[in-house]
Image 1 (cartoon, rainbow, N blue to C red):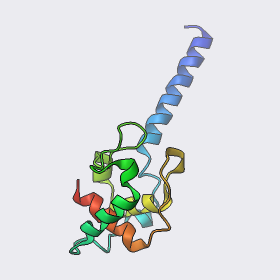
Image 2: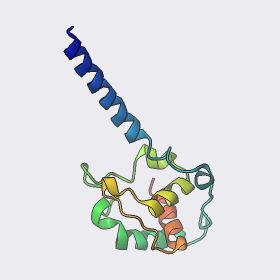
Image 3: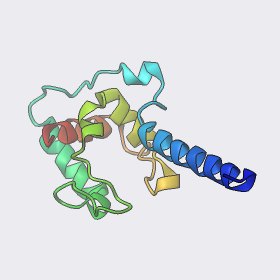
Length: 125
């Protein structure tokens, strides 16, 4: 293999590894203190139902009524990644957003509503 092809192959491998790492790092970015946060709405009657209403107002346009996204840019919210994420991970992500991938920050929503959305998302898994 020529030096140029080896360099190109190495660069492609590095890019591929970076993409894989980035795809898996969504929850790894969450600070430990936020990861460990418990949902104060967990187990409260009506929390998931209230979260569904907030979801319909703020999330449905992108993630669709069934929370399965569009299969392209807008991801499914019924995924292994979300199932394995802690409640604190999800609330942190709602608060921070991910503008590079089209996800706005929902920090303007009251904390109680963000936690209700977390309860809803966990209930549909």
